[in-house]
Amino acid sequence: MDRFDAMQAFVRVVEAGSFTKAAETLHMSKTTVTHLVQQLETRLRVKLLNRTTRKVNVTADGAVYYQRVIHLLAEMHDAETSLSGASATPRGRLRVDVPSPLARMILIPALPQFYARYPEIQIDMGVSDRIVDMIDENVDCVVRGGELVDLSLMARRVADLQLGVFAAPAYLEASGRPEHPLELERSEHHTVGFLWARTGRALPYSLHKGDEHLQVKAQYRLAVDDGNAYLAAGLAGLGIIWLPTYMSAAHVARGELVELFEDWTLESMPLYIAYPPNRHISLKLRVFIDWVAELMAEHAPVAHRSIT
Image (cartoon, rainbow, N blue to C red; front, side, top):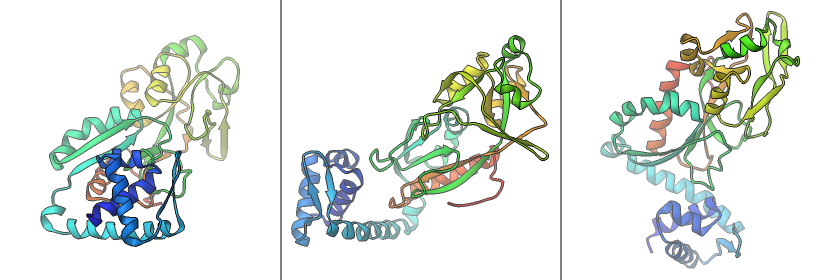
């Protein structure tokens, strides 16, 4: 038995909750993973996992062993990457999930520069605004806008997205230009709603001007759960939209969107890279996080640097 492979298999089964899913992420057969864990249990003379037909649960002994093993594997990884040759060449597959507009407008166009630096990193990029189970889906990190709800995650704040309110000329021609944000709560105006994955509903927007603070609960005829679809709906004149500057700037310059309420300020939206608390930050993940932070500093720098 290769003790390192066995410990790695055990950790992945605990995190995935399934021998099948663990085998997929390790690129091994389910039989091999099962045998490795069984051999580990035999060697330790303790039961690490309770197996049923539906799921796998870690035992009390297994939970203690898991906590020690993840630290041991992290130390082994650090020992390897501390060598000059290894630390200079991050390599391997990285699984990430990012919002669709951020991928289309910022990250993917900049990837040639990333690969020029790190040619041996392979990225599997999920492009979505959905909630991702990073352990179950074996995702190394996610990039998400808004305050983090799952406080168990480790996260780095990489940007503060400045927001504005916009409408297409066609919408303004048909419905008129609102002069005050509260006009959006009246029947003659509509917004495009964005359905946040964690709530499944559109949220009110906060604006302020001097001492006046508002929570605008606008009516919508269409709500979507994808950033690119949200932008497309606004461009089509289906309603007023709230956008980060990086999404709106080019369309405003071309006259496709008009900014509203320019004398009002919207609360900025923090952008985070989050990753599982028990997942060791590999060199490939570390350089990816640093690269995203460096890239976002050009587009939407953090107003007050913070780490969560």
